[in-house]
Structure formats: structure tokens, C-alpha cells
Length: 172
Length: 172
DNA sequence: CTTGGAAAGTCAACAAGGCTGACTTAAACT
DNA sequence: AGTTTAAGTCAGCCTTGTTGACTTTCCAAG
Image (cartoon, rainbow over all chains, first blue to last red; front, side, top):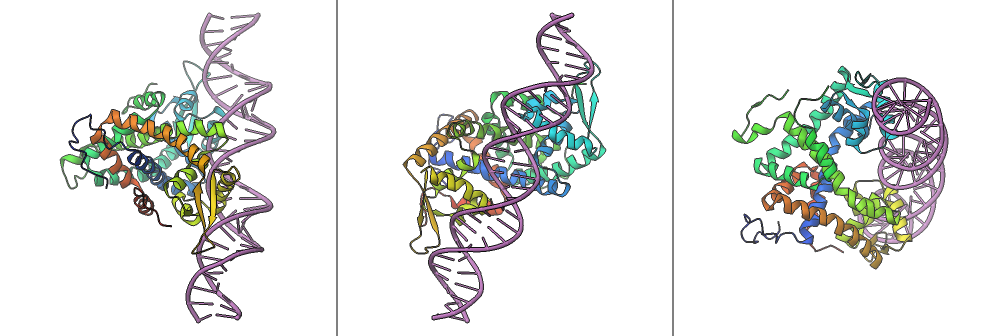
């Protein structure tokens, strides 16, 4: 790889490797890795006639069952019309259920049905398998660094949403 | 849900955090980070009436000046028709130059013009700035791990292309 | 020297998934 | 009562991906 001779790699001040070349390699790594990251789900989705947009909706509804449309909109960062097109299909096919809110009846709370959960699992299994494999190859230390860099790369707004998606425990 | 210690393979201590929950957080981190990763260039591209596809073409032509269309096709992983549409625009606008090959006159070798380089720089500057910032926050150790995980996540075919894009030195 | 195949380019048609703008309905808030 | 909010819808547009069919140019092998 590149020159390892940047002296002490433990000092936070040793930013000598931040050459344009190294940064460009990072950019390219993101590009190629993201392709791998989406490749397996894409293949599965095709079988069912869905796309990436459906996957994202399924993923985040699974993660935050009972979430409102508005909340999902904020997480996904798309327009109401875009999301609605996708959601309509998933509801029509019986993968997602939309329930009128109790406190506020204007809101719709979204849930995965049994078959919705099943597809989410299938997609998630594939994606987790690749990630697990990558983690195994790179090792535990690398995983920590990976996550740190990714988090630092997010827009602050997005990082808020990311952090809010903690393990378990949702409202409702 | 997340049962810890499922099938402890290889290094015992290391795999304890590979719960489904942790893996899902990794997946979400990729999603949100990629959004941040593309946000700045997207804003710039909009000013000039271009899209992400144009950015990718500019990036890889900059990286491998004189590359052939076929080679670019393999790197980008799109169809000839898709790439050609984008390339046609860039050539018409004078950002990219297409030269007939010397050895093999069927091939076209692609180069950025001065203004092509200028736009590539503008895009790249923004993207590198974000990456540099993320690297600085995460620290040098993290950067190494980041790159290791990303490389392990690529499809083998894509990793070949990635590795081929080493510093400097192009064919011709 | 002929011919098969590779590299590039083009036309046409289509689909997914973004977007804007305008508008409706129902419910909540003030 | 009037305004705002959440959701949904219709219509239309754009980018970027896809197939399929076809041409031109040219290299290389028979």
C-alpha cells in the first residue's frame, strides 16, 4: 500500500497520510464498497419486483415499528410523493400495515406484517452476511474505526437520526 | 433477537459484538454516511446542470487519463448506452476529449480538458474536504480500519478495479 | 484477402425513483 | 371559526439505469 513511514501512527497529530491521493482512494473505496453493499439486496428485490426504495422503507419500518410517515420522510430524506408511491405498493401487497394514530388521528403509524417481516429478514440476512464477512476479514479494531469514520462523515442532521435509532425500545 | 456468542468462530473475544443489532447499525451507518458523502458534490453539480453520473465519469477519467470507453464501462458497471449519454454531454460541453487510439484505432481514449479538470477539482475538493474532516475526527487508526472494512465489502471484481487504480502510472 | 468479431456509437423505448406544484381531506390547535 | 398540520393524490418532468437492434470502423486470424 502507501508509504507506512509516516513515523508514529499513534499521535493524533500525524496527519501526514492525508494526501490528496490517499483521500481519493478513500473516495473510491466508498464508491466501490457501496456497490457491494447494495448488490445482494438488489438481486433479492428483483425477484419480487421491488427496488431499493422499497428496501429502505422496509428496513426503517422494521427498525422503528409504529413510526409515522413524517418521521420516515425525515429519515429517508425524500419527498412525500416519492415515499408514498413506494408505501402504497407495499401496503397493497400486504407487507406494510398503516394504522390510524390513537393520540393524533391525523397520523398513520407504520408496521410490517408477517410477510413484510419475512422479506425484510431475507434482505437483511444477505446484507448482514456480507457485512459480517467484511468485519471478520478486517478484524475488530478495524470495525471500530470504520464506524467512527462513517459517523464523522454524516451530515449532523442525519447523525441525529442515526443516533436516535438505538438498539430496541421504541415509542408507542 | 440478538443472542450474544452465537457460534464463536476463530478469535473468541473478537466476534462478540457481531450481533444482528451491531450489524444493522453498520448497515445504517453506511446508508447515512453515503448520503453525506455525495451531498456536497450533488450541490455543486446542480449549479452546472450535471448529475452524479457525470461526476463519476469525470472522477475516473481524471484518475486514469487516456482510459478507453470499455475500461470505463467496466469500472462504472453501467451499460454502454448509459455511459454514452453522459459522455456525449461532457464532450459537447468541452469537458472531456475523446481521441482515437494510435495502436488500435477502434478505441477512443478519454481525457479531461482544462475546464473538465477544473470542475473535477471543484467536486473533488468538496468531497475530499469532508473526508479529511471525518478522518481528522476519527483519527489515524480509524482510517486504516475504515479502509480495510470497505475493501473487504467490495465484490472481488470491483476490488480488482479498485486495486488497479493505484497512485499514478497509467497504461496508454 | 476475406471475414469474424471487437470497440464504439446511436436510436428507440421503457422503468425506477427522484423532483415540483397544486389540491383535498381530516383532525388538531388557537 | 379559522389556521395549521399530517397524509394522500394527481399530473408532469428529469436523471439514470435498462433492452434490443443496428451501423461503422477496424484488428486479426484463417
